[in-house]
Image (cartoon, rainbow, N blue to C red):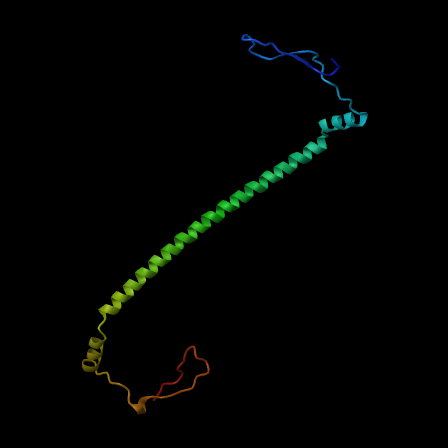
Amino acid sequence: MTEGTVSTEFIYGNTARELRELGNDRTPSVRLSHQTRRNRERAGHMSPAYVFFLTAAMTLMVLVCISYLMLQAQITSEVKEISRLETELSELKAENDDTENRIKGAIDLEEIKYRAMNELGMQYANEDQIVGYECEDTDYVRQLVDIE
């Protein structure tokens, strides 16, 4: 048997239930260089300034994540509010259109014309009563002098 190898002895027969290893319990040791040992020792120790920097960086990261989540929640609630208001607007428009159609249906224009002409004496304008004018601004007309 050579050094560093493990010999294995097997027991055969109907009573053998497990494998037993016999031999040397030595594990081969790995020799580390002085530089490697020093680097591993340095890696195991952190300076207080580095720990403070890492703590500050993690705190900043947590604050940014929290503010991001808060902004996202605010945007979600505002989108829901906009959706609710749009639904309310469409309902009000439908209600307004229904009311306008009911009012238009309730007004009999022929009855109004009949009463205006027969009871109140309204007449259509004659050609000599119509006065034409030119307007530079088409938004509205302002009458400064009575038309005769």
